[in-house]
Amino acid sequence: MDSHLKARIAATAAIAIGAALVSAPAFTQGSNTPVARYTLDAGTISGMGAMGQGGGVSAAMAMMRGQGGGRAHELVLRLGSTRSPTGSPAATHTLPSGARFGPTLPLVTPQQEGRSGEYSPQTPKGRLLLYWGCGERAGPGQPVVIDFAKVASGQVPPGLYAQPLAVAEEWRVQQSNSRTYGDWPNGTEARPVPANASLLGAHKVSGNYTPDINFTLDTDFMAPIALRSEALASGAYAMNWNPVPDATGYYAWAFSAKTTRGGEVAEMVWWASSASQAFGGPMWDWLSPAAVARLITARTVMAPSQTQCTVPAEVKQAGGEVTMASLYAYGPERNFAYPPRPANAKTPWNPEWIARARFRSMTMAMLGMDMGAMGAGDDATAAQTREAPASGKPKCKKGLAGMAQRAAGLCE
Image 1 (cartoon, rainbow, N blue to C red):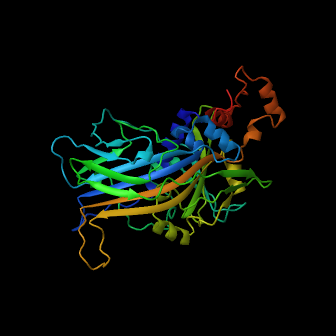
Image 2: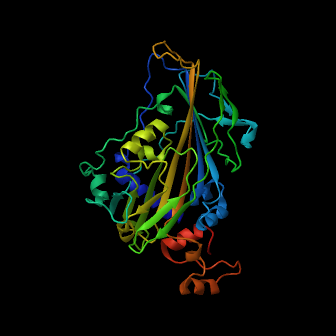
Image 3: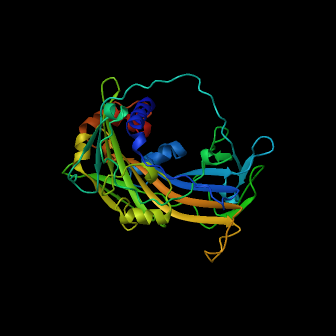
């Protein structure tokens, strides 16, 4: 998809629905607040999502063949401390040798930047149509229609996100709740994580505003997801995927947009696999197994035994040329502390530091599109192939489908 078009879609969606998305709660300071808190979030990315993470064109082509795509990895490190450094803040994360992209990663403290000028965003136009639930047909009360202009002026439809999410109060590290903060990747360094990287082994975090944090991981990056989809006669999309080892639950969402000739977003369609209205927010993040279990009970997240879901026909009928789908597999969690938490809950506990590692796997795909649809499967495509340039690739189709094909390196 064209980067400028993606930016317009993202900006419009953010203005229209950003305030309604639910965020994970911040850490609450208390009498036993540790000096340092550290989080390691590790992700496996497959399908078209792997292209921007180092998977390249081969990832997209493998995904189109139903092979799940080449895998790529993501790693997000956040350090928060109650201490102030002597001099400039400095901290590093030392990786085990199997990581293959170390030996250390700098945890950089973001610089506060002043505003260079005032920005007055234009009032968004168009509508957002919300659908949810697995099944060939959309359920009653769908779609919920949101007028961008009305939402931008504060007129949010009543009860849109009324159902409370079953995400427990879980601490997270942010610059806003830390005296000194550092993260990776950052503006100084953001090297790609190799596809063959491993996190197994000893890790150490050290710096001039944190006590040394040492922990050993016995859990590694999760396996990739191979997402397949088939267009049904009803107009629905049947999706299925491989069971991912260690997955605690699954959550899927799909998105498409209709644009004007000028490239402006006229209407967007957003679907989620949850049985009720539960969009974005924590489901786009790393979730603890306990939170996932509660979300499964609330029918917001699919159980780990479920490996298929059908996107209703109305989503395709209302959407644009291309429907992009994402699927998340939430994984295990490991917790560390010094000194360790006492076995007796009544025993006072004042840890010097706490650390947490979470894992997930996710994939992205164009629903209903495979290599046959992008090869010489029909007369129109065969004609394009006959007009192929010297590289041997067919010419790209017009519109969003062509943009998506070009992004995947399947045409020119």
